Length: 403
Image 1 (cartoon, rainbow, N blue to C red):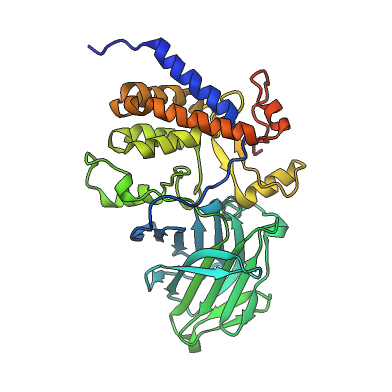
Image 2 (tube, one colour):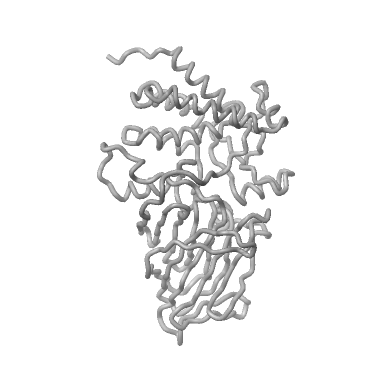
C-alpha cells in the first residue's frame, strides 16, 4: 500500500514555491543567453507532413525552423525560438499546386545590421516546380503576427517593410520597432533567374527563360536574444524509448530558459503545455530539464498565483504594451485566462519534490536556488512593481493580458 503523504510537508513546500513566485513576479522576464555547455554538434532533421516540408536546425546561438508549404497557396517561412520571431513569404495563388524541394542542408549564418549588430540565422537553397512565383506579402516580426496574418487577420502597419532589389537579390531588413536589432530576409534567384515587378508592383521571382524549376537561396536572420539550448546528452535518462525522431523534436524545443510548446506557430512558453509535458515525461527526463520546465512556470506566476498560459515577448510585447499605454516597453506580457495550469501546478510539484526520489534529493537545494533568485529579483525591482506584488493585491497581473 502506498504510504500516506505528509500533507504538512507538501503544503510547506508549495507555500515556499508560491512565496518565491510572488517575489519573482516583480521581475521583467526576458530570454537569457550565455553560459552553458560548449557548442555541441548541430541538431538537424526534417519532418515532412501533409505536403509541407519542415526542416529544423539548432546549434549554439542559432535555432531555426524552415517551413515550405507545397500547395496552390504556397508559403515559405523561417521562424526562430529567439524572441518567438520569424520571417515569412506568402505567394499569390497558383493554378496548380507548387511542390517545394530543399536542395541543400541548412547552414548556420550571421550578418550585421546597419548599426553593426549581429543577427543570427540560416541559409539554404530551395526550389519550386514552377517558372515563377509572385510575392503577395513578406513579414518580418513576432511569430504571433505571422500567425495572425496566416489566419487572415491584419497586422500592424509599422511591421511591414518594403524590399530593396538589386539584380537577382531581394532584401527585406528592419530594426525592431524600439530600435533593437531586428530581422532580415534575403532571397536570391539563382542559376540565372531574375526578379521583376508585375503589373501590380509585386515582386515576381522568375526562372531563366521560363524553365520549369525556380531555384532560390534563402537567408533569414533574427536579432532577438538567443536562447540557451539543452542538448540531447542532458535531456533523457537511459529509460527513454528509442524513438530518435520524437527525441529530435523534444530537443529542438528544449532550452534552459523554457520548454517551447511547438513550432512553428507556438515557439515560446505555454504554461499548460509545459506542465503536461514535464509530468508525462518525468520518468525519462533528467532533473535539470524537469526543473527548467517547472522554473519557467514559477517565474511567470501572477501575484495571486495564477499560471501564465502564454507569454508575449519580443516585438509582440512591444506592440501589446503600446496598445495599453506603455510605448517602447519590451516587458513580456502574460495571458492568465486559462485555468488548467492553476490546477496542475501543485500536484505536479508534489510528484517531483515529494514522490520522485530524484526530486526529493534535490528539493532543498532547488528551493534555496529559487529563493535566492527571488531575492535578487526583488532587490532589483522598482518600488511600483513591489507594490503591485504585495499579497493583498487582487490584481491578476501588473501586465495586461492579451485581449
